[in-house]
Image (cartoon, rainbow, N blue to C red; front, side, top):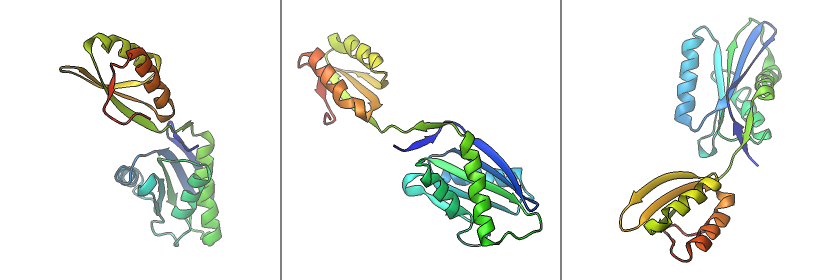
Length: 197
């Protein structure tokens, strides 16, 4: 099951006088990743390279930033994939120490920097969420709110019209049981806008 990070984690290694500063952090999309990399350039204006990899569904990216092709971004992306992560940005700031590492040395340096950061990174399991919408008579609103609380679901929106319309967000795996419980307790007076699971 895919996981993401709960918080950023950092690492730093020195190889043949080159300094590699790594960071792994939760990141939703490429625009946010690019903003994070731009901020790193402001923090490290003297860096030789800032290579990065983003694993975020269809917005994934691997950037070598001037290092020989395939020696930085792609290996960092492979580390994220190997750990079954999703929605994660890996960055490495490199200060060149004057000694060339060669292609193999660069791949090892970038993968090791990210692997070190991931050792201390707090990971959380990703849950696919589902949003449900139902309509109930006013008399059932209190019952529904209690069921939402009991299921640790999120009440996204409530609108009061002829009926009360509630939008509820909860883990997809719990949706079918939740709908069944509401239908049973509502005794046929609950209408679902979205198809019930």
